[in-house]
Image (cartoon, rainbow, N blue to C red):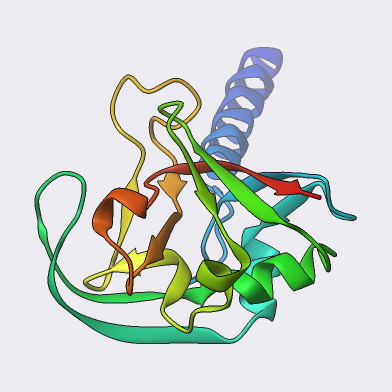
Length: 166
């Protein structure tokens, strides 16, 4: 009888420990959770931790829409030029940006240095998530590159990789 009580008590304690450990999903409060591959620079990855090291900018936007057709009123991000400096890309002829959908856009140094060219994490106060069914992006928070002083067809949604072109 005593062994049975010990076994039941042991099972209850074990079940409690498992349930408490399972509920302990660690998440940095208010901190973005993403990473972008970088090719041709000193650092090979630009991550959420790196993002928080840079000056964050909030910009009001007029007459712009997301790739899903939603109105954009404001964006929060960091200067793309600061990102490139952070990863150690000091000299380049251009930068190629690739999305999780396979789309690519090439930015010239003039576009990169423009004060309205941002790596954006927050649009209208919310993060955007990767599209359902998109391999590597589904269920992840995404960053985007918006060159707000340039046509929207030069914006890149769901950024996966930055390639530095010498």
